[in-house]
Length: 150
Ligand SMILES: [Fe+2]
View (cartoon, helix red, strand yellow):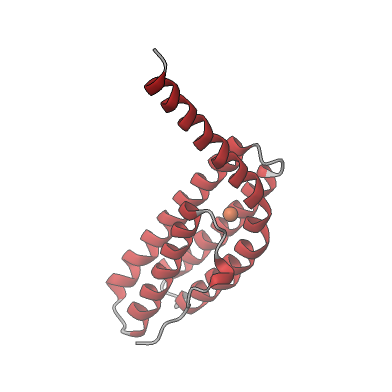
């Protein structure tokens, strides 16, 4: 069975937790593509909901991370997520109404997420990387103090 979307290095943000989430979305898209091609409608329903749930979870995780990292345009980033979530909800309603919008959903996800990762997510990368380093530094200092001071 052919793969709809192949992950490549241009999609890496270098932030491992975010990359893992993005890869999981790509996996969902490929599974959905294959289930749709095989005509397995129950599996398509289940994967659609799981994908929408996972994307919502990823967005809210990322938004919290951006707030914690003090990213100055976290609100604008949140709005971009909200607009896409609205689009997915609209497609879900059409799907439930019996329209075959799965090919549209797959292509929207691929186009939107590719652009979003390459532009919007790349933009927050230095802020989040600095934040993660700070946190790791603090954690190490605490551990060091705990072990070596009396
Ligand atoms: Fe994002």
